[in-house]
Length: 375
Image 1 (cartoon, helix red, strand yellow):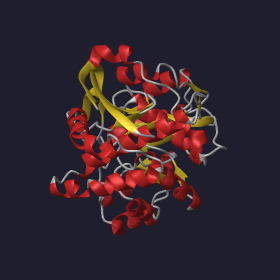
Image 2 (cartoon, rainbow, N blue to C red; image 1 turned 90 degrees about the horizontal axis):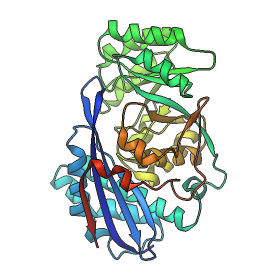
Image 3 (cartoon, one colour; image 1 turned 90 degrees about the vertical axis):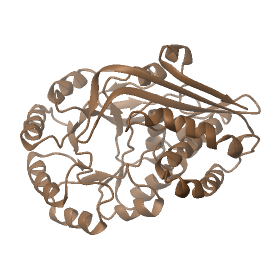
Image 4 (cartoon, rainbow, N blue to C red; image 1 turned 180 degrees about the vertical axis):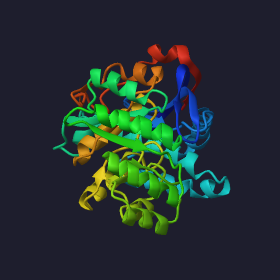
């Protein structure tokens, strides 16, 4: 694949109900998509992650336009993992000098996504089949991003739309959290599962306390109860003293760092847009499953990244579920165009090549805030 052209498309849409977490909110939905075109005119798509703070979507798109042309244009790519590692090494000094490891990692993750999508399209295979010929065509999913203000009601709504597994955001005070958790637990049908995400809310003592009552309630996992950079000894102490499975890894960078976290994580949740792209997330998924952990890709952004996450989960196998943000996001929905749907808790994946869909840019034009074409 010889890369001839780079496209960066940035969109932002208002929403009536912000996405709420224990540390912040998303008052609008942004999406920055990276397209790579090869010398044969084939296109591969990647998603430049950017949720918090809201302005980071536009900034990371600008960073991509600044850093990528000299690294990509005119280059021929055969071995994607090797090429991706070369990009990481090329921008290492920039990440140190500019103190921007997160934004640079997100830009390179989008490049890696686009290269894998491009390769799968050229091979006329779904990406999951390029990664693993025996990959499944159907995977379980769960409704994610349930807010504290109306979580129980949204569970009822999403059950009517085909979901059978749900995840609520907690960390808003014990009274609010307990009320929401117990209302949802009490309303679950046989076979349905329920998880919670604290978004790094607590210290060790607070996390232990919450883990006790959440375990008693029957919650399936507790996600990111403490900041991801909490010292390992405290994570190990939490793991040793709690009965509830722990989930996380979306905010970890580096293969060694994630593998170390296998020591306390039951559910391993790397984000294909935050770090590593398809190359490293697929490697993590395989390592996690081999270590007896469950791989559940994290995603809360645009449709391109969601499709990559679905393809990765199908290729990796195991017992993991696809995270499907059910908050209002017209950009994601317009991009997907119905490519993913949920039925009785399962998602049937597209059979088209690559990630399974190509964004309809005309349907997104109303929300465009920037476009760059670089050749």
